[in-house]
Image (tube, rainbow, N blue to C red; front, side):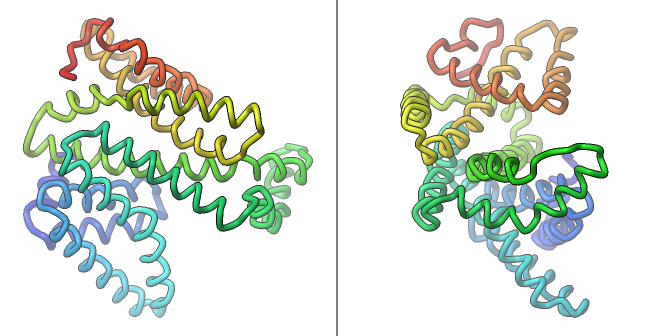
Length: 305
């Protein structure tokens, strides 16, 4: 990854090339979208907002020209609107927060409040998110049912869609947090590789959201479950993903303080995440508890808070 980051920072044309290529071919292998977005983030972190906007302008022109050559000019514009709105603009915003504050914790807190605000706006616009998602998912129910039938799974599709509609807003919001945070973290890691070796590990392992958000989480749980408030439950998905990231920081910090022979445990953690998504909740709980118990201070790792 160091060579790619170095290539990007050699000149703006390189950054435009990498962003364009990764943004176009990520449909073949979706993790590539993180590389394209992190390229923008690296330029934003190191050279500032103006240079990052220049890279995005160049990338947009190239993508539109390629679309026109393929007879898909309008499709290229639509693609830019989606990628720009979901990936590039958030990356610019959050990397600038990180650049100005030099605090990954503050950046993640800003991300939590920004996505929570989007959830609030969405609730205000559609009125009933459950009804809105049912209308979106219902036309796709036939295709889902056929795919499940091929796999030998017999399920009551109307019931499944009804249940999915209650969590789709929260799941989508949590995925926004995860995607944005991964992009920012990758850009920061690249920056550290080139200009501050070892700095990223210390910064990430010290990630902490604080007692205010931890207390707010408890309040949202009480209101969301007690009053069946869907808005509170959707915002809980956002905070839960943020505490998951803090939990991962705790795990990395603790394992970093162990004997090198035991650091294979971090691989076990990621394998468990891939095989058992329920582990996300356990790690999020760990992250939440860390704000009250300061787990890292009680363990062998030495993190500069």
